[in-house]
Length: 325
Image 1 (cartoon, rainbow, N blue to C red):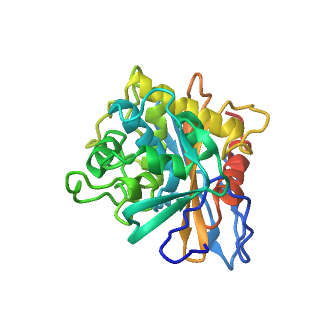
Image 2: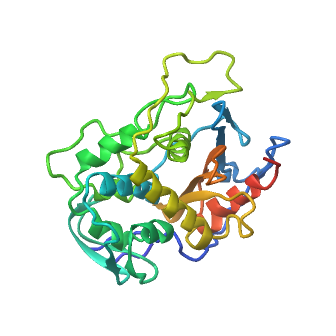
């Protein structure tokens, strides 16, 4: 990404597709469990995991590898829950997005930084900000959200605990000093915070079932022995926070950064995308659940090369519509 002196360019999730030379998409089938991969670039293979919200079964149609990387804008879901539950944002409060917002302090290792959106979104509220993944909104709205509060909510949403017999990804050893900024974590750019795809899928599942529901212990049909150490997680969300998250994720699919995921709304998906810089290219995620009104399945896809628009969303679409749910 282009960076001006003293600024940090943070990619907007709804950026136009960026075609990278040498990047070869892998297409997967849930039925046949096989992949079309390139012998010269096997690392371009996406990782997809899904779970049945009723029985807890976890599927690995693209293989048993479970990567953990920076989650990017997926963490705006955690931040949004904090904003609602900690009363840090008044109802229907809006912030102006001009495309750039100057941030004081340190973000992702750099001082005197600015966050950017590809487009100026104008005045947006929390639901709209989730849908279009507005960095400028979240930089302003989370000015009073501390790292400690953010990480506490991340723990409640399962991002610090193992899942389906697999260890978790990287989670901060320290909750930080009192008053420390949460922005690197809100934007999913912190080096010490890299949840696994399974943990991100479980977070989507917890949002799906909500505080009135119950998520069973997730387990893999590929594992012959179930790890008994895991216990069911209570859903660490209030009804009000869950309502906001579902609305934002639903709008994300209908008109936001995941609008090309299900253009005919056949599966009635609620989803959230995230893109992060990776050297001279990008990596991306998408998580979600469906049907949004009566959730049955949750999923996560990680694309090791490309933005959410040119990698994660089309890869997820290919997989989700390769079978009958």
